[in-house]
Amino acid sequence: MKGKLKFFLLAASALAVLSFVAPAFAGDQDFTLVNKTGYDIASVYASPVKADNWGNDIMGKDVLADGASVNITFPHDANACHWDIKVVYEDKETAVWNDINLCEVSKITVHWNKDTGETSAVTE
Image 1 (cartoon, helix red, strand yellow):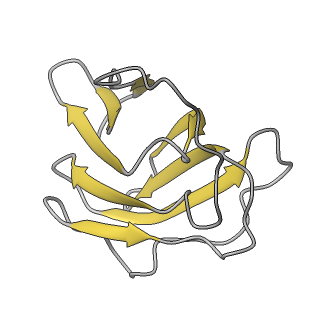
Image 2 (cartoon, one colour; image 1 turned 180 degrees about the vertical axis):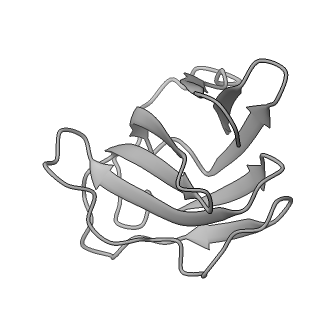
């Protein structure tokens, strides 16, 4: 990717409002990451909101090719729902999305618009 990228998050709307709130259980943070950017993603990081560092690459694959997806799983003792997500492309460009509630998200699809130079993520 060339040029400076603008980053933003497009949150998908809920289909319906439930009359009850289910508590978060271990493993609720697991999600599928889909790469629709036109570029390979070299690394993926997730850290609880306001953490001081990103920790290790959580992707579980060496490279996530354009058009491919990977299932990201969290340890059973992970209890935070709100996470910051960072992807690093092979050219070292990055995109960051803050405060994603992974207890309510099962899929994140990353897109890049070459006309606008914007990277976006759609959550489901």
